[in-house]
Length: 316
Image 1 (cartoon, helix red, strand yellow):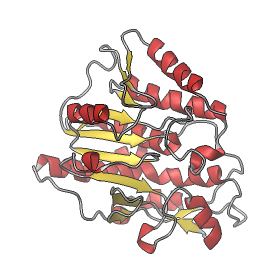
Image 2: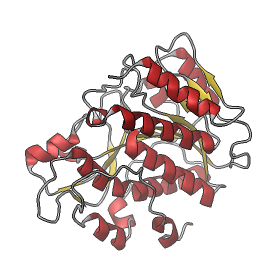
Image 3: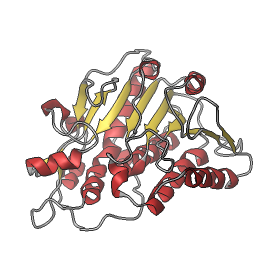
């Protein structure tokens, strides 16, 4: 059972981990707050290029975060990651549909582990991390301070309101692991959709965010990902399937940022209408995505981006 003490423990530990960090909470948020990094953390961080805020949590959000950090390290003139907004799965007051989403499959120790590492990953990169409510005035003030050019979303339990949706000049985009163009798997249970359809493969849909969950315009999709094991069976553990699906996130994030960065350099604001991810992603990656699932147990190690995508692509 979660309780606010677990939340306080995580915030306490990450603040103490580095001298100079601060935890700030406002009266209008019922849970969480803003954690500011120490001024010494990543002091040479890029302040140039496309300003990105990530709304993300769990392993998928962590992987997108790590991919964005890797992109910024390699191309600091093109990307400036300015903030992370993350789920708070440790406080029962947090309205994040805890029992309907992936957190329901994860025990409390791993929730603590995951949230701690996600927050730590953002702070160590020199970016502030917000863990509270997003439909409050204090958060709107934070977003106006961050001034994102674009927002990415991957595993986030709160409905994002029109203020945030309309804020970035280059759009707000969600990664969802099902084919939304066929009305498959919208909402918090894409694994159950795979099971109901006895599916052999799945795709990620990258779509505009609206106040209606998973109903925004789909700008592109990943190549197919094999969700069967070597025996041709869909594993009964959803975490095993989700970890396989996660292999597509780094190339999707990479090419989405490439297109956003290109538009930013051209001073061409407005949301992206279409990206041919399947045409852009190298054949070697597509072949890897179609390899069967090799383990019956989920990994207890947080995923890292496959940096070969950065090496194999000539960035313009």
